[in-house]
Image 1 (cartoon, rainbow, N blue to C red):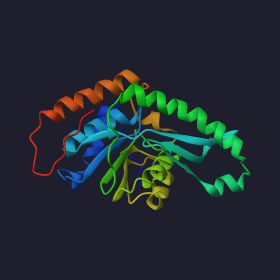
Image 2 (image 1 turned 90 degrees about the vertical axis):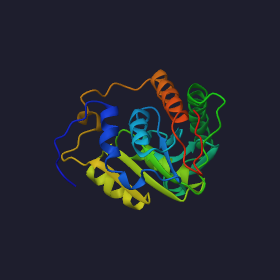
Image 3 (image 1 turned 180 degrees about the horizontal axis):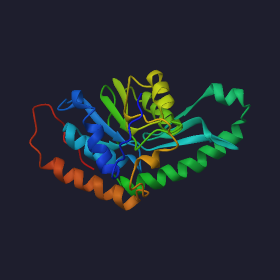
Image 4 (image 1 turned 30 degrees about the vertical axis):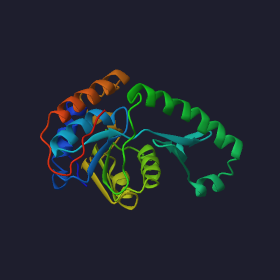
Amino acid sequence: MGSEAQVFRDRRDAGRTLAGKLGPYAGRTDVLVLALPRGGVPVAYEVARALHAPMDLFLVRKLGVPGQEELAMGAIATGGVCVLNEQVVRGYGIPERAIQAVAERERAELDRRQKAYRGDSPEPEVRGRTVILIDDGLATGSTMRAAVMALRRQEPARVVVAVPVGAPSTCRDFAAEADEIVCALTPEPFFGVGQWYEDFTQTTDEEVRELLEQFARADAGAPRRMGEELWAA
């Protein structure tokens, strides 16, 4: 863990830097890059291009404890997955009706994003694959933790969490959450992800759609090796 002073120009620049840390995964037919929308998409776009890997989205909505929303009591995710952290649920005495209310609210947002980003496109098949989960940074890590928890239900062979920048303590903690954690920068002191970007403007739904379309066009025109699957947005 270091005290690097590098600041990324934007998320695309961060993705190119992160890709340099993921060289061992380049050119492998079992690798799938999954982005957490919205901020993770520009980062993942550059990583997937550099690794010559397919890219897709992993839509996840953290289920926050009522009144302490930053604390995850579970998650809902792509593929109809719903998981609960029973330790948190029991420890905070959260009633079933409260869980259902939070889940319904977050399901509505997940469904909105599903329609906005994917339309009728099929969801990615992750079973048996090495999945690289990407976001634009890790602060508390609660959303990524929820994503890993949900993704495990779909039985990938290996889960790699990769971010351009993260809080040192959070990156250390993820060693127990994922099969591998790659944090390109782990600066100290760490006050937030945005401070390590010159441009940390919120990624819009339109930008997500545009990047998916660009990637699909580029991927469709790329040469294929035997056994590679064609990814489509």
